[in-house]
Image (tube, rainbow, N blue to C red):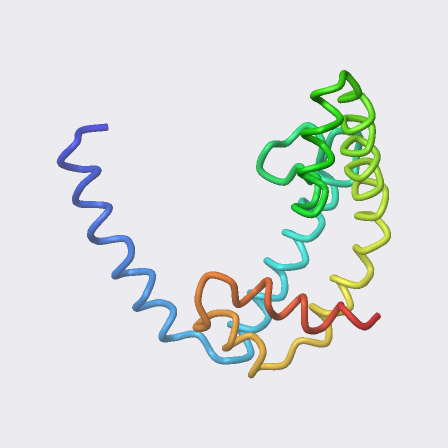
Length: 140
């Protein structure tokens, strides 16, 4: 694609999308957000809830907690690093096994989402979705 055409599209498309967004009713916006979140939850469960979903992905791999870093360094220094490696693998495998169990919680949180919740997610910044799910799924 010609660089000028790409640049023009990059400027025009967001404006058109915002104009269309203004025409959406609150109900449509919430329905669209709910559908996207439900689909996204399914994709996340598929990606993370399998072998190496966490362990094989450096972006979400669970490391040893800070409180164990000193012990880890000491163990590796005396040739016992395999035990630290086993603990890391076990924590990640546990997370991989737990993800499918959590899917129902996410789906329920999406179904229970109010218009106010949806607006908060859409306007609340980068972590607003995560904050919503943390608030609505932590107790259950």
